[in-house]
Amino acid sequence: MKEQIEQVYIKWEVAGRQLLALSFNRSGSLNRAGDGSEEHAAYFFMGRADTPVFEAFMEQVDESLFEMAGRYTLPEPKGEIARLTLAFSGPELDTGFEFTYGTHSAGPAQEVVELLELALNLTQQWWEGQLHQRLSKQNKKKQT
Image (tube, rainbow, N blue to C red; front, top):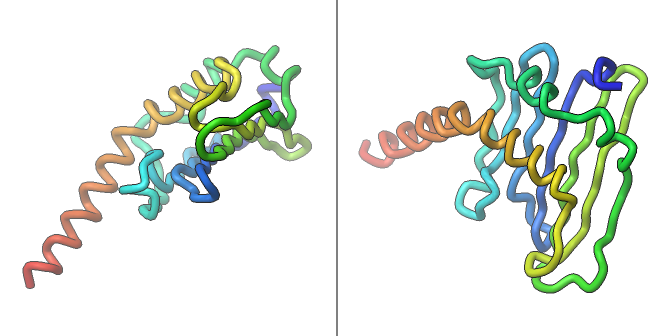
């Protein structure tokens, strides 16, 4: 199934607020909004990374993970309601995960959390560079 995947999409929402949206595809396109914090949730950047994000990510995806694909609402949520989505798509493929849980209770499956962390790590340097450029431009405008 992995060879059919062309795009990966990740979204994390807490209390209805999108704190992270991330997508990357086989052709090298990379989009990221937010970093998981309220502070940077509104920043959206599109482009290409200097490193092959899609390939590095897919190397770590175990084929058996797809057997667990589905939507899960975890019982007895404590804290704010959070939703984590991890989707994989291709020409004849749409699959993935959606976990709804409380911010102070059990969360998504460890395998999915590890993939989220991997995606963040693979795109972090690119994200920080884009954010730095944006904030520098904003500071220059304020000074004039």
